[in-house]
Image 1: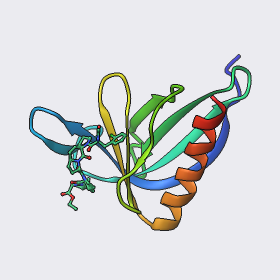
Image 2: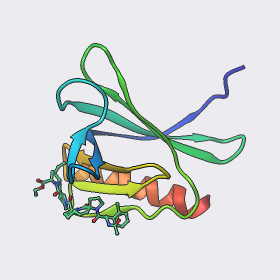
Image 3: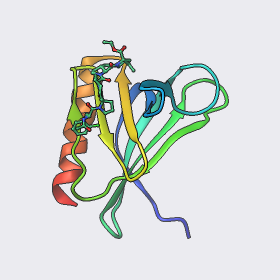
Image 4: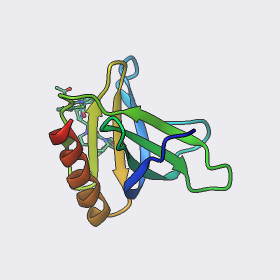
Length: 115
Ligand SMILES: CCOC(=O)[C@@H]1C[C@@H](CC)[C@@H]2C=C[C@H]3CCN(C(=O)[C@@H]4CC[C@H]5C=C[C@]6(CCCN6C(=O)[C@H](Cc6ccccc6Cl)NC(C)=O)C(=O)N54)[C@@H]3C(=O)N12
């Protein structure tokens, strides 16, 4: 049966990926840049965590589904723009508010601490 994932936090953000070749940030997912609801889920069975973001608009497209690996460095480049590297790319979250950014960062840092 599908494991019940614990929804630790949610924040509104535009999910971006860094295009190394073009040296620019591009919106994750297809179509125009749009705000997503970004979650940090915990799988309590194996103490794993993942960041999942879905577009707020009708199609609810999944634009990020990124497991959090031990040792990731979460960089709060600005109060509203946070980023981290995974094996393949750099993710950027452009949060809709500083409060949501702070709450997300606190949860992220907790997860990275207990991994
Ligand atoms: C205001 C105008 O903003 C803009 O027009 C664009 C679009 C804005 C919205 C989407 C976004 C918002 C905010 C600013 C904030 C600054 N910033 C950048 O991109 C900076 C500037 C230079 C550029 C160079 C590299 C780049 C890109 C790739 C990763 N990286 C690193 O430095 C990493 C970081 C890191 C550190 C520690 C751990 C993990 C990681 Cl990932 N370091 C290393 C050692 O890996 C980076 O973040 N860079 C953003 C930006 O410009 N923009």
